[in-house]
Amino acid sequence: LTENLKDDDSGDHDQNEENSTQKDGEKEKNDKDKAQNSTKRKAAVPGPAEHPLQYNYTFWYSRRTPGRPTSSQSYEQNIKQIGTFASVEQFWRFYSHMVRPGDLTGHSDFHLFKEGIKPMWEDDANKNGGKWIIRLRKGLASRCWENLILAMLGEQFMVGEEICGAVVSVRFQEDIISIWNKTASDQATTARIRDTLRRVLNLPPNTIMEYKTHTDSIKYVLRLTCQDSGSYPQLNLESRAKLPKLQKDLLGVNMSGTAWV
Image 1 (tube, rainbow, N blue to C red):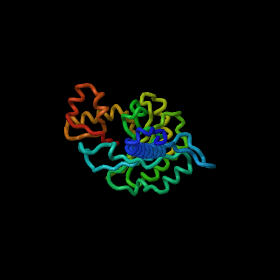
Image 2: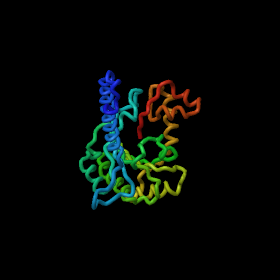
Image 3: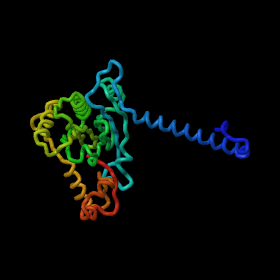
Image 4: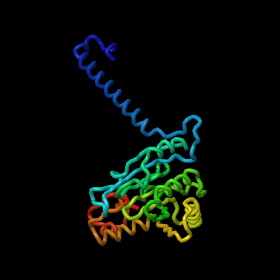
């Protein structure tokens, strides 16, 4: 830039050079930021000689104070992404360093979802779906969780792209595992998921399994908010904006995105 300056512009030379240096510095910073963001967004890929999975998956962790969530809590704030993997070997590298569900305390959850799907009712992949729920007595969560996620990663459910993810929820008196699918109205698919779940977990015939649509979960939240305007379960502001006016009135003036099973 300075080489192209004319002699009669010499009075502005220092200012131009300073501006050029500043712009170069800003450009370098922007390029660095872009490179960092690109690295963060870089998709997980199997390494050499690794065994690729059919889909990439992401581990998440969340924990909240027992009882009904307060307005200061939000699902987006509480959930933490652990990492994404694309191969069997990468999965074991994550999993072998994670605490087992049976060793978690309080209201804690592990989530394992396909990459790009958030463990939220409102996610595009989940909004028309639902989940199978199994309540476990204490001491069974670690084994059942491992069997469930291995079956999911190994495509044992054989329902195409229907599976979204799985959750294990540690509570004081019991633990809960669930598997989420995309289409709640597809009864043949949900039945196949149920039967596969029974098999991979080796559940006794009398085990109670509940299927709940995410729409029903939202309706349940609405009933709770009618009873207690101080409760704010899983609905974010975007979802609230899409509710009919009457339902929004019932929800009251406060809302958070806290999620729960």
